[in-house]
Image (cartoon, rainbow, N blue to C red; front, side, top):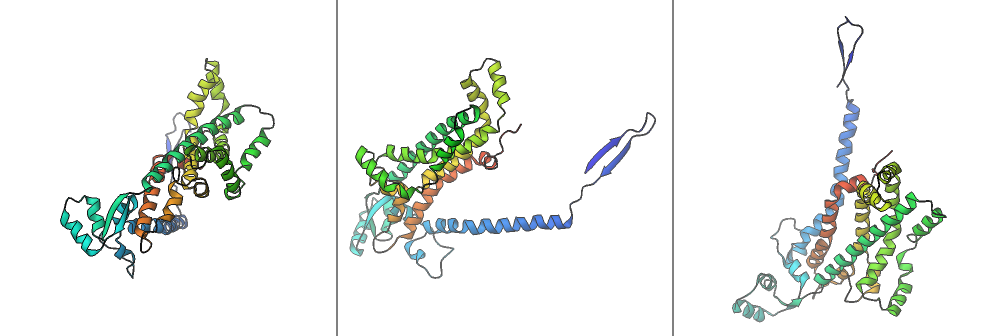
Length: 332
């Protein structure tokens, strides 16, 4: 409802005119239809994630049940089997193990299904490798991309258009095309199956995306802010740190999420360029087959643990991300 006041003359009383903005029934119906459609689409997209969560807490018997069970007694068998190596025991060995007592909770969980823990599995180390490699490469690609984007945005660089196109062209080449040459090069220089090898590779592949995305944000920050700061005595670096960086934080957060997702989910390079020491989680999850059949609960548990770090980072940066994907920085 909008209210306006008009003054006709000194002795004329104030006339209040009231205008009521009404929403048409058609527009209200369209809004409700869009909401319903959005909810349906979101539900359909989240069904696989919901099913992964259910499968991770199912027992081997519940997984193979027909029809599939939505209500069951949850168990941590999938998570214990994911983080440990085990062997199948006979009924006599199971009874003897149970009678011996002094069992930890993990041993008790596996003993219910006739299995004995023989030691830790490699998945915890592989998940740690993913955290180290993806986190470090994301920091490097965003940091270097921010400096390069600022230079392209603020300085007159000869041939900047060609340079930007060359940087972007590195994203046009499918990774699988260069996998074999990189493999041979890494074997020759000693970077095969090393953390630094994957960090360098992921940084290079993310750098072009980082430069292009961050340049768009920095272009929308008025130069006058920096010029005013430098007139007051700031150096170029101080103006960048105190003026540009805080205002570009939205773009930095959005770029960080996208670069992290690429490095976290990358499969081909990790499968080809690593064997044991630097193997990350994506190529390790499909190898969880189990003994006597595919252990879907263990695979689902690994998938769930793999999803959690990215969900946490995305949720923590959600406010910046929602603004960043619309390029909503500062406009003149």
